[in-house]
Length: 314
Image 1 (cartoon, helix red, strand yellow):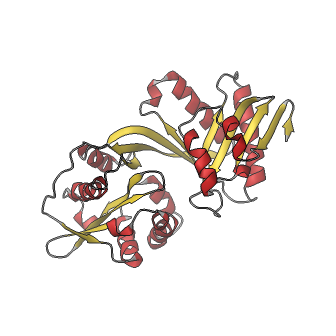
Image 2: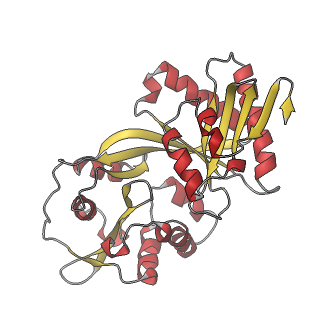
Image 3: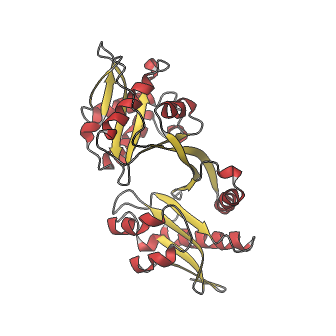
């Protein structure tokens, strides 16, 4: 599709990855593998070209081959282009690609972008974020949350078990979904809070299990439920692998047991399970507003290596 001297089109295939990656971003090294695995499709990866110059680009991602787009996780502008033209090009590309890829009448998938930890203190990084946010807002998107991206690295001490809790493997889907439903009470997670305005907690938990946790390739026999010595369930931790990195996919404490420091025991157990596999890193994330969870990760030796912003269309 041509707009004046711009050509807007998807990539033709894997052979155009190098052209698509002329704009830098932390996901560039994963794009080819994602195409091979079906997490991306050429028709989901759009470019705005001025001759052989890449003026803007975007790409959607999904969790498994055959699913519709799950997230807009790449949206980049040529920051050397003057404003307001830079923003106008981004808007035209976004509107053109959305019209071609997404079904009419449905909310677009969520937008995600990874950022340096102190991006607000860096003028270049801040302007890049503000530009992209401004374009997305012109299409109706709004900021949902900013998140901490956390990493545990080999050599970081893992606390020994405190002895206050005992751990056992998760029994089955129904047991975990029931516990996930319970921990949604009073949750500080922005995504969960948004989902709870649209559906009951049991459905939120079931959809997260089926649409996320069940798709992880990490062995499920590593998932743990924490019990008191008397046999009461306290919470759970899901150490897994998301197809890119070992992760603490989910950790939750039941409302009746919050405020007793059990989050530290759960997180240490999940970290210990993955660390025994000689992994190069363990990744995790939490909302910046979820202060108790963020502090627990800090106590466990996780470092804040990136931020993430999420925007949604409502």
